[in-house]
Length: 312
Image 1 (cartoon, rainbow, N blue to C red):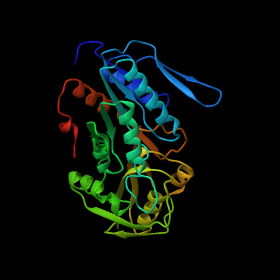
Image 2: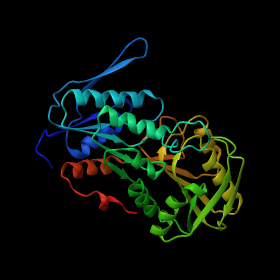
Image 3: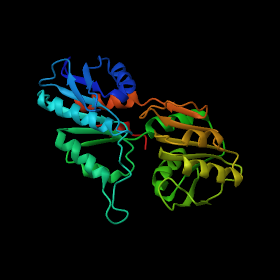
């Protein structure tokens, strides 16, 4: 570890719960900063201690609403103007990641725009987890340390000692991720083929593979309205699955998601705490990723490889 006080960790407003755990794992205090709000909704960020010549880690997920992204941008700009040596954005959940390409005419590529905004603001590095599409790393002109939630989800699954286990992907697009889990655990893989007429709406779904008498675990990177994952669970249960669980990296859980999960065939749905879950649902469980991010910060400071953190 670098000498004391050579780095500081600061948090955005909505991700303070995770930044405090990261600091506890690092054995350092959380940096002091102030967010000042104006009556018209505008806000300003300031640091309450010197950061001149230091490596500054700014912890903030960019989940809705957009104020979280704007706050991170202001934190980066303030750090740059306060003469920080290096500015590292720690973004457990990178929003706008689903907008990674032009899937129809005359649309924006939001992920590239956000990457450009962060770069222009002044970041020197990004630490993030389970981007919706791996190619988003190439949208940045600075190093990106891309972590995987499998580092905490796989040990959790192994601790459950689930018999007759089958790993499933809720759609063909997530097959690579699910296949990685299946290979590591040495169990079969099942796919779901869905048709989606518009965002957040699934019209039909078919299972590719055998789930009869199996305990199924569906793997995904995020759950937003929970339409896809609950429909997949219901279809698999109807097809003869013994039980259906789900694991996903990011707990977006917007709109009717909580009610859908509660009323679905899912026995449990496991997330990391990259996004806080504030509603009540006895099927939702969150696993902390603070130690994983803290270890990555240590290795960045010591110029060590982070690749051996990856289980798969």
